[in-house]
Image 1: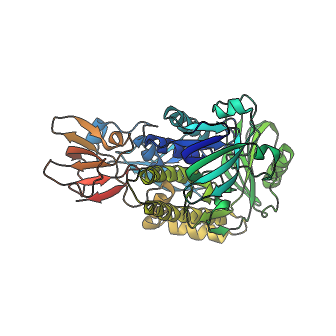
Image 2: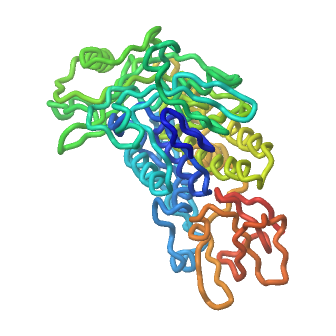
Image 3: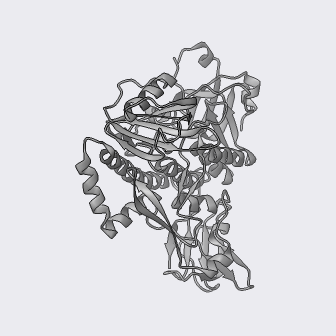
Length: 496
């Protein structure tokens, strides 16, 4: 990277350093790509966010060593078993999510802030340059590079060093902050030149607005505020999901202190969405509950709605999108965070191979096509769930619940929520080499390389890249293929 004052040159600029942006950066750096991350926040965002991690994402996290994978002896002992757990759909406990016993679990609770911190630690350890307290305010698209104009909110020395500021974060998430292009600070700010820019900068993405990223949009029909608070009268706000004539509340009781409490108001959307205040939060809860609850220690307020949008393309020349910049929707079941992390795993290795000349840019079209299909399915099911939760439309709820009683419909929805409807994913297995050594596929994928598996040295591996890790031996459990090439993100590239 260039270190000349006020200018940085890099392979990839990631705009937005939330969990998705940090994971994109870590995945690229794992492939020896130079990366700079620009993030307006100076600290982790500790407001109530997603904490549900589904089966497909857990598998991907295990393949990079963020969480433990299933040990080889456990896979050999129970190679065809299934884990199951109950889950909700439109606040109704009607789903059973499942995952093969060779994978970590159907579901896990991991706070979003913890994931972001883990991804940032990994990115830093791999040499990623992270500029917290900075915002991209303009992008200039050239034939061979993109130039970003960056505005710093910290003293320049601390920010360029990538250090964490001690000041309290007052920004809104990881979105690039738009300011007047002619502002004094912007004119004298940092310039970053990158071959590609990845927008992980949230629903109001500057990167998305800069490029050609058409979208399918579902307008909001309701409004909601989530926060942390102490309910001073036990039982006044029912635990779990609670329907009322005007909406829903959701309460995760915490005997040790603040609990997550959400008020969902189905009287209609808001024309303007200013920063929520404690007074408005209390008012919204009182409206939904029908009586004002006794609350104390209210903090970490966030606003959301059932607005849905997905970009019909996630690639435009030297610009790419991931996470909320590409798809945003009603936050039910942690699907947004999961789809964003899956975007990162799908994008990192592809973009790295383009930059190193191992693949043509058309593989970025493959990324866009795969992830747009996934986003469309998620936005569609969250819109449906919102319609089911509307107190004015009980017939929609009853009709969908009746359909979910059909096993095939139930299983399709369950696989959609857990992320397992995506075809081609290779579940974990044990490979026992000829010398008796055993390793799992998850372990072999830690380095982010293609993995080619064959039963013996005489069996070819179809279309294996020159840099693939080739392993020879017996696989457990038995597979429908003789030899296979597995992509760095765990999906089958080819089989024989």
